[in-house]
Length: 244
Image (cartoon, rainbow, N blue to C red; front, side, top):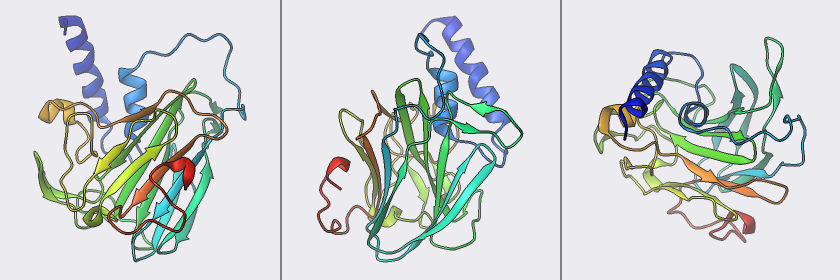
């Protein structure tokens, strides 16, 4: 890696670290904004375009969970997802910002998932975050345990307060989407795989960002966020999101 690239990466990490205490941040948004080059823009993006697709939250766990959907600093809803149930949501790639204006590129969405109906953030909190963002036809996603794990070190720590962690989590998708996996009860801290346990794995551990990607998303594309993967699949559920 050249010196200029190292300097740019350091500056990006410094900027990210300086915002780590913000009430809302999405790792996929940071990754897209700081480590990916925008594709050529033939035409300006428009809201409500034909690239829709679906995100499916699949709860194989024997207990219900609560879901908060959030983007930017705006929280749109809270729902209860029963044990052994699933729910689908349209992929969001543009939205109106609470302070005015619109987001049409690198628009992040976070699903905060907890066993409790009240969220607790920070180290040792009670929420796993399922995060995604889009950039002109590309789709990026990750798991974050930053707000539930504690005593974290390189492949060590305690993530018992992270919903689904003790029985495993994964992200699956149609087409050639990268599968992201965290085995049951595993501190899944790997190079470009697993989950976020800290905000800067490159800076602290020299590991690539645990971000999954899809080369495209459109009507018919499905991304599955699965909790408790070691539990039996739901009725008619298979290993690909397109067959959920």
